[in-house]
Amino acid sequence: MENQIPAAVQLTENCAHCNTQAKPEDTFCTQCGYPLKGTEAEQNIFISERQVEEIDIFTYNKTLRQASNTLYYLAGIFILSGLVYFFIHKDDEDVVTVVITDLIMAAIFLVLGAYSKKKPLACIISGLSLYVIVQVLNAIVEPISIAKGIIIKIVIIGYMIKGIKSAMEIEKIRKEKHIA
Image 1 (spheres, rainbow, N blue to C red):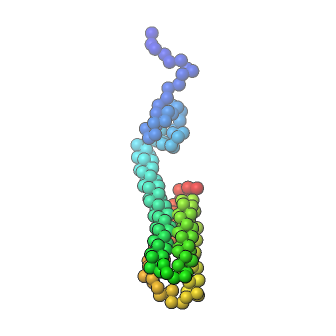
Image 2: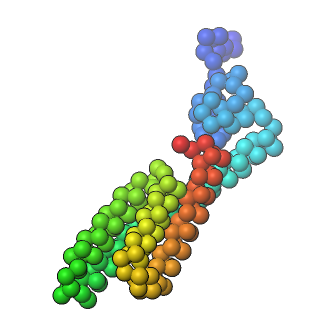
């Protein structure tokens, strides 16, 4: 007498890609979409596309970190410049105003850096706009301030532009991969 499996019990197999249990009638894995009954070529294409997507997500996360770090680095620069200004000009009347302004800017850039994980492009453009507005206001009050630290100002603006490029890349990847 042969061993017969009752009709109520169905045999299952596991997906070769994600190891999820699949029913015999499943054409594709319900978890990952792997073509269970596809040809070897279809299965290889599926796996290679998944590897490319994993690389894209790695690139996305790296680019997101770069964009966020731009804002954090600038916060550090504001803190450092405030401290340097304080120790160089501690006898000036307006030293407290300049240091407080730098600390407020640093705090704003820290907040923008933290929020940039959700809205990187908006945060970096906001940071660049804020920086340019402060520089313009400084130039109105003291026109010579345009020339003071011009190299650092150029580096900061260049770094912000690099951050904007990273943020634009993030937005592109988000749209392509439907990442919220």
